[in-house]
Length: 207
Image (tube, rainbow, N blue to C red; front, top):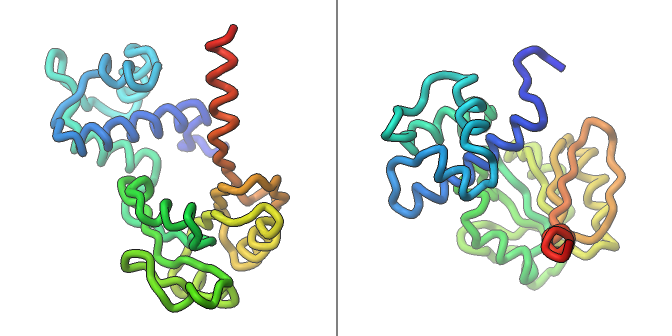
């Protein structure tokens, strides 16, 4: 691991802090304390201050952290400054909900293309995002500099789409399907499953 690369634990916690900061900004807040971040993340305030102080002096005792400044600094640390392009696969109910959500936009990601195989949807838009035919995948990935593929499609076609994304050079896949994807070791797959998260929460509640 390169000397300047974050550990998995630090990167995961910083990402959670960034989510809290972003939502706090949307709520109209301008500053936040480590205690407040702790209440939303479950991370000890001392750990939060230790994580942040390792990269500079951001907060003031008795005042807290300036939210705008800290968002900018954490994004730099996570190397996510700027805008990163996403391709969304599936223009059904789930795909349209994802496209209409601010969950990616808030963190510097832009859905620049949506793909589907339904001819009645191809050529239309979701908001201002064009729906393209799946056959255009490779050309659009190259032209739009797509970094992430988001799969909001049936499980039985997810592996094919993952294979085509890998062949086109995409290294990050966000999988909303139930499929277990097989990809090369240099490709990252994150599977989002509300059911799994619920089971995890229920385990601690019931035990």
